[in-house]
Amino acid sequence: MARPVRQAQIRPIARPAAETALPTLPTLPTLDATALATRWGRVIVSLKTPQLRASWLRAELRALPVAMAAETLELVCADADVGRLRATALVHALVELLADPGHDEARDALRAEARARRHFTLERLLRRPFVARSQTSEPPRAGLAIDDTDEIALSRDEREERKKGLPDYGGGRPLTLGERKSIARNPSLDLLPRVLADPHPDVIRQVLASPRLTEDLLVRMITRRPGTADVLSEVARHPRWCQRPRVRLALVLNPATPTELSIANVALLRRHELVIVTETRALHPAVRAAAHERHARLPPVRRGPDGSMQ
Image 1 (cartoon, helix red, strand yellow):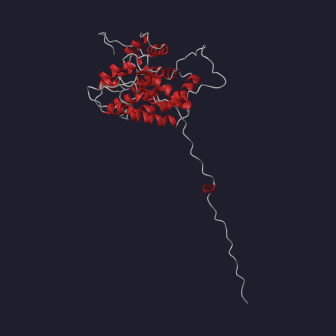
Image 2 (cartoon, one colour; image 1 turned 30 degrees about the vertical axis):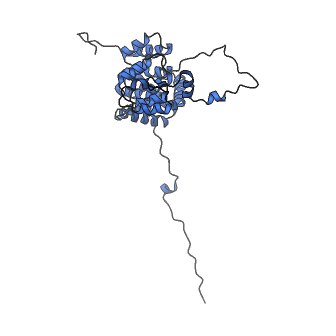
Image 3 (cartoon, one colour; image 1 turned 90 degrees about the vertical axis):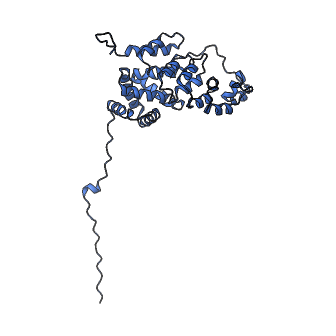
């Protein structure tokens, strides 16, 4: 007679308490604006080119909440006002970064946070001048609107062509935008002044990268009156030329430069340049006010026994 097979009892394997417990998530480090500003200062001076500095700062700001970014930038701007070199390098990268129209949303968010939290130094750098709307503007007419789609569809260069006509660069016939951009990539020394007088920003963008362009020629172009806002904006956001003190001052002193760009560049001006800006009556009052405020916050100049500044 066969014996019944006894089924083995399966016992659960006892696990240590540490394995059965749910894994705990690592605690995030507490963000501290002072420590963050110090780390930014150490890193920014190790990056050699303005492009690297602006790209790195962009990545850092994207990873932060707006409130923490504004608080840290307020400390950085305050340190730059008293002449600390690392903070000044950070403000240079910030001004170059926010000059890009693609970052208008981030600029508006930082501006709103600076006003709400009373970060006055950062607010001065991001300030947007008040523009009163005309009360006599004609309200939109009800009913059938005039078909102006053709005018809206015109590109910027086509509208300029209707107003001024195409430049000919001395060749005897008007040149198209493509021809002018092609010449601007590598202009001859004879054509360089004519290319710099071109009213289209795409042409200026090409010539700014030319190795034949000198600072003297560029400053002469910036100081020309009347100026074109789009052209001056291209110069203000160019990583090579926006770092030059003469170019920066010429941009601020041109009334045609967009006011927001001029106010931001005021944060990078030196003491005697701030005095020039405050005394230039042709500038927007907001630009002169920003220069006056920053000049008032600069540390006093110490003089040695021989009268020299220290």
